[in-house]
Length: 393
Image (cartoon, rainbow, N blue to C red; front, side, top):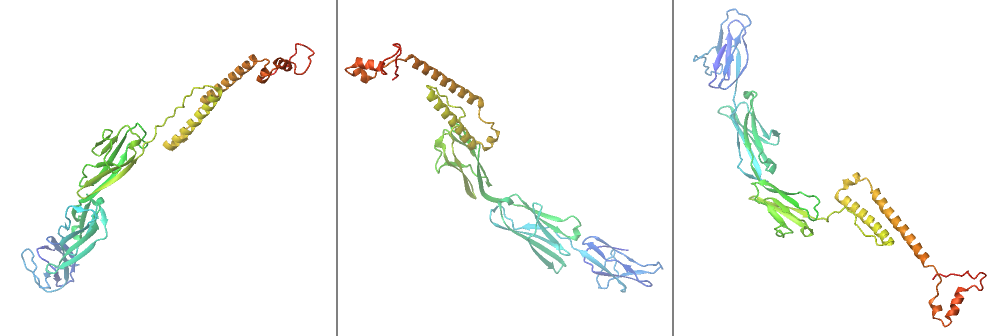
């Protein structure tokens, strides 16, 4: 057995014996490591074994030189360990939309190493690969380039370059680079009230995200300043409006900016009338007025309720149980009672005013007495003096 500590590149060595054909085995070793060269025979007949160098290179066996006849060849393959990779081409920060070219490079590998790119642990396939051989040392310099457009989603992403080689066993060499991308603000408005009504309040929150962090936002209404600073209070990114009324209707704009640029978004505010579910109360002055007023109240209430319900909450219709039968029954009972009372009073009035009347024409004539007589005895002689014909004017 020949044990050799490699401090230089060895290509071929020889092993031979006098009586039998020797058996050898190829050896692969990492530069700087230790190689065990074995030469053996099948039968032990005290045959002497000798090592030789057919390429006339110098072999150092524990500071001793060996040279002898050629009998068999033993191939020694020396692996070159790749150096730790480095990533170049990144200058911080990068503006959104700019093209980035990152290059990963490693030297000293034999055979040539493989380079793989990853972004947040997800492998990137579309890369350029370049391999150069160093003729002096018989090793390789390998480089790979990753080319892409910078996006705001890449901000904070970790780009890694991994070198795989058989000399590294299962532990690859890795270089990492954290990306920093600058971009314009992204703005949106969040409302605290989806159905604002008169007298209520509303809070509008302007959310802005950018890098660098945007400056304090600017609130405007219909292209100008806020018209009522007492009710419209701005606190940082929040706009609070109290005691809403119809004059608050309009378009509210939130604008944010940073050194990269500016951006804005709008919110249209519509203040609705107050929704009232109570029935209107009306004094009933007479039979006709009471009937008409009651019908109008029921129709208006039902129409308003249905309209407001359909506008405010379409899902609430499923939970309604129908009209209030007790209330309708009570109103009908009141109407019937008033009708009966009116009929009774009218009958008594007509009964009390029963009698005989003369027309104005008869009273104004010159023969008024005769007219009275003619009216009373209009049908001639009466069999019974108590019988009279009565007329109601």
